[in-house]
Amino acid sequence: MSDPAVPPTPPVPLTALLAREDLALRQIAGPSDPDIVIHWAHTSEMADPYPYLLGGELLLTAGVHIPEAAGSGTYFDDYVSRIVAAGGAALGFGVAPVHDTVPRALVAACEAYELPLVEVPPRTTFSGVARAVWQLMAQARHTELRRVTEAQQSLAAAASRPDPVPSVLRQLARRTAGRAVLYGPEGAEIAAAGKRPGDTVSEALAGLAGIVTSRSSTTATDTVAGTHLAAYALGADQGFVLGVAAPRRDPGDHTIASVAAVLLSLLTGEHQSGTGAARSSALVRLLLGSAPEKVAPLLGEERWVVVHARQGAQVPDAVAASALGAALGSSLVDLDRDVVRILVPAGREAAAQSGWTLGVSAAVGPAEWADADAQAGRALARARATRVPLARHGARPALADLVPDDEAEAYARTLLAPVTAVPALPETLRAWLSLHGSWDRTAVALAVHRNTVRQRIARCAALLGADLDDPDVRMELWFALRRL
View 1 (cartoon, helix red, strand yellow):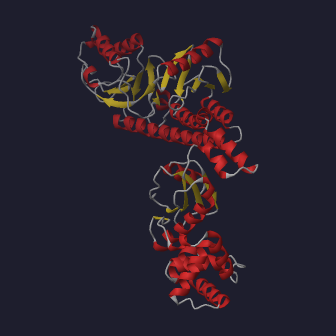
View 2: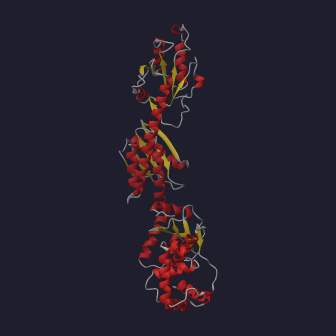
View 3: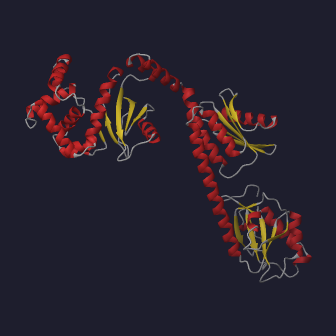
């Protein structure tokens, strides 16, 4: 069997099993190649074990099946040849209780067919050998997972550096002890890291990258001059390809390279699509004094909503904020202390997200972004106070729209002038009125103690000289606060 069906677990080198002093195993025939590995241990006393092997086994036998006259015929040649044909990795022979020694004809057959033959001493049970194989597999798996985890962390850190693409390639080359190359859409080598292999290997790697691009495949592998090659397409229809050339192919290398490919897909995707350049251009124009409505066309949308979000009792980090933006369909994310603000195209409906509380503004044009930001903030405060996952700003026409804006704003400034000197007072008054005078819910919305709310509202009442229990007074104040 040229391609044995092996389990998805790291194989165990035969040398590691022979090194176990508690087993006292001894190889007495066959090659002593350190690359010989075992995928499992299997016990069989069948004269022809071929139908029961999958390949990669250490086959254990006590020789019960061996006839008395086996040494004078072709029995052992037939037996060993069938094990080799089945893809068996090695043969373990127990010298007790049936045989005192390993038959010399079996030793000769294993030498002839280059099958490693291991002598199992009387005090070592087959179950003990099998248990040792599983223990070594578990250790190898743990080592592999730790290596992959460390590589993932280092690759993620590299992607956050000022020169992310070269940094990711350097880390990948280091982790695979090989060469990592980024090829452009035309097949040219854009960046590379690690020791450059010979021309034959370099040309083969470039050719493999070309195969991935031309055939719309996601990955391709090959081996040239003892060097293992792999190519990974980056993203969908971008044309970028990651090529890796390594002197060996260790467990976990494919996972590590796949992580690097995902990161490079994100890094190259922005440059290829032009969105990264467009956002940079928009930022520069804003900083240089352009109006939002002049900059918005660079972002590709006419109307937007602003979303404010808080992550339960946790303070969100940049990764969580970016993940939330991706879930809402936008990469325009701002993390401002414990609140995440996201500018989302109006065509993408903002939905509740597990673990988050959201406040969503009305859909507005670029000239009204600032107003939408305030709307989202108030909606978030209402959502937190009412303990709902998402609250939206109401967009119904109001009686306040009947008053001209300049007159309404002048009225608001005059009415609220006594409290605007202390920003916390109008903020608290607005939250308290929006929550129908609830002390507890206002405290939750503002993240302060309920007694603090009481003190601020009392001070507002004193400064304004107004009875805040009067619904007419509340209505006038709410009208003014909305125009402030």
